[in-house]
Amino acid sequence: MRLRSLLVFYAIGPLVRAVLGPIKPVTAPLLSMVASDILMHHFCHPFQPVQFYKSREQDTVDAVLRLLRGRCVTNLGLVGHKDPPRTRNVLFFDDPEELLHILSKFSYRRNDYSGRYLLVMTGGCTNVQTLRNIFSELWKLNIVHVNVLVKYQNTSVEVYTYQPYTPKHCGTPSVKLVARFNEDCQRDVRDVDLYPQHRLNNFHNCTLQVGTFEAKPYTILERKVDGFVEISGLEGNLVQLLAQRLQFRINVTEPPNRMQWGTIGPKGNSTGTMELLQDGQVDFIIACMALDVTRNLYLKPGITHYTSRILFAVPQGRPYTAFEKLFRPFRMDIWVMLSVYLVCVVVVVTGFSFMSTTARAFIYGDGARMPLMRAFYLLFGGSVLPMPVRNFPRTLFVLWLLFTFVIRTLYQGSLYLYLQRSATYPPLSTLDEIHRSPLEYHMVSIAKRFFVDRPEIMRRARFIPPALDSLGRMVAGMADRYQDRVVLCPSDMVAYNNRHLKRALGGKMIHVTRDSVTLFPVTIYYQKQSMLTNVFDREVRKISQSGLMHFWVRNYGDYDFHTNPADAAVGPKKLTNAHLAGAYQIFIVALVMSCLMLLVELVSMRVRIFRSVLEFCIR
Image (cartoon, rainbow, N blue to C red; front, side, top):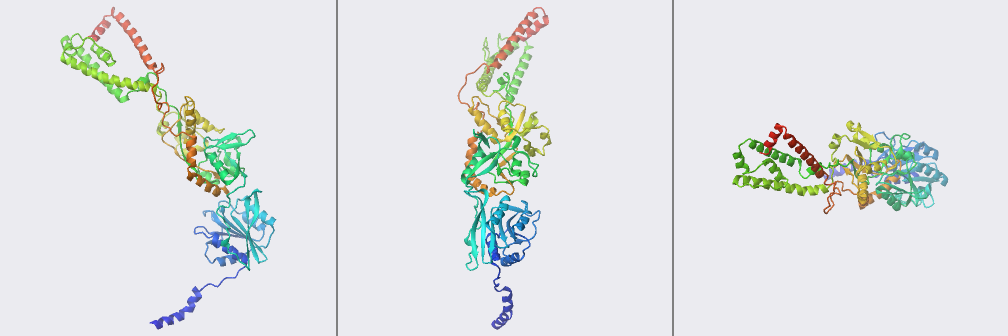
């Protein structure tokens, strides 16, 4: 058995060694070896292929592919429309003109400009000005994570990159030699950090253009005497902290014609801050910018740094009339039961009025006249004479006295409290209540995307014209000015105004619905090819995790929406004539009715039917 195994081994061994044996080292030019090493150590990714772009030169590409030996997934074809943008790209070219031809075919749909790029110049040595021109073209596309390999007479390969921001240059590429590889003393590419994770972490006090407008409390603009605009607010503080951490200065650019957010579309069809960003007039925009699918098609969003709610600011409830205030101590069901009880009393007393005098004396007591008037007299706290003597009338009298005492005491105690409280009906609290009301829906034009499936709402919608903080001023007017509309807005705008209204003497708070329309994730938007996204996202993530955003949010607003400060006041108040206006009205009505009754009694002296009715009522 052992002999048979040895024979098989010696027979098949050479074939196995030929197929699976060690691969002989492939000889290749130094440029190809350096390029392949960089690709293996910095470009291989389990989910992203390395995208190859080449000009006419094919030998270097073939050599690099042989050296890779299939250890990296590569793609030499075109990027499909459904494929994600490539984050690993390597470009082979002979001269700068060929590079420009390759770059002219780039687009943000096929290439992620924030990814890693390797440029392999196969045409031989070059000067610094040529490198500066190459990096200028890359800077126009915001390609920053890039290295250029340049060979010198097949004896050395130098690796160059550039810094767009330095203490002496702002937005101008500064050429930098990263490493040099020689044939006699080869240097491992792993010894050099060719693609540092944080290439841009210091802007060296250079200026970045910020597109924004005033949208309190998110962005608050303060114009100085020298024309400089200082930004503050929830997101203004965020930008200020980013500028401090990344060492850049802020220059605020507002949209023309006060267009605020504006509309988004293909380049040339946008307005407002969207147009500023698409045309490259600003580096990023921030001003209550919500994540939106349409915006994401043309712009690049950062991470969400705050999530708010979209809801309706509703008008104050309708004021109670002076007479309605008297009915507030009891709920409607109690008034209904009390009315039914009194109607029963009237019916019973009227029925007993047709009985004989002896029967009425047995029920009411001897000498008891006008029992219905006596019952209402006791209900309002009066006294009656004479007192019943018999047991049944006395028991009936005590029960009625106890009932009226309890009802009257509860009413008077509650009435004193309700006369001092807010004399308005509760504001609208749900979306269904708003829909049933005749109020108009006021909103900014970009908010109509929330109601694309609600045409009945859009028929009543009125769009707020763009102006300086137009939405914020309309929200502030909901406290005491507007009664014919509801305003769609983020909850932070209401909280900001409520905070300032509470500080004002006698200020009324703005009410909101308990139901929210949708959540409102707020972010920063950049150009599609911007290299700022990853840099800012890294810092924004740290700021959000530290709790600073939550601190700023609470510092700029009062989020206790459903507590009326007037009702929450502690301590009794003196009653005024305004509180007692309802009682005065009842007194005047009673005087008028007394005068009318006097006229009826005077007429009854001459009209017999009137006299008969009055005699029946006093029985």
